[in-house]
Image (tube, rainbow, N blue to C red; front, side):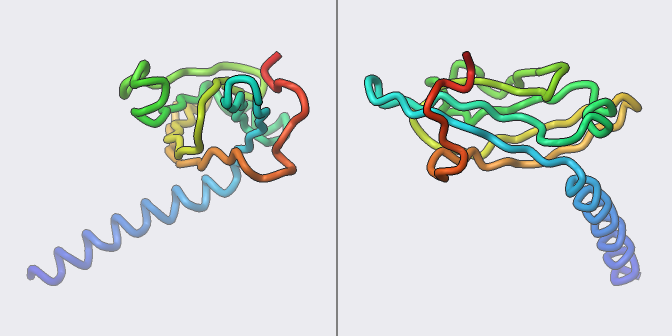
Length: 131
């Protein structure tokens, strides 16, 4: 009996994670950055890197920054972004993982994690990407 409950529970969690993983593969995020030599900070932008058809299905994106970001200014509160490519611009000193919540037009909500990359050359810009 206990084994049957465990297997049923395992199948439920496995199928829900598989569904999310399959769906998340359809949504790609990317980032670009600029390094400011004067203050030693990175100015970065994260955004949904998808075509117009996919973007039109998204209502909002909630970005949850690392709790240490900007001395805890945001705490555990998300920064909600609407429209265009759902880009968020900020400045900081290091890379971290962003928790992301995607809210779709059909009220479905999915979660993912994105590692903010501040060292790959093809993401580096010679000018501030947030201007």
